[in-house]
Amino acid sequence: MVNIRTFKSRIIAKFPNDPIAEVLKNEPDEIPPEELVGKISTWESILVAGRRH
Image (tube, rainbow, N blue to C red):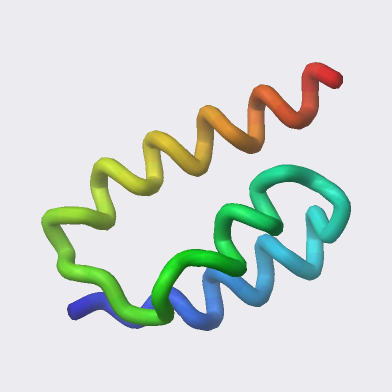
């Protein structure tokens, strides 16, 4: 398992009003490494989409 608690906290603090903050709040603090690769791509898409608005 990969602990993403610190990552989540930093992104939520940096983008508190963006959709990515809500998404990350609902993610578990630990995820399997094989899921991390896919999630990073999804999180990036959410972050980019939020910046366009």
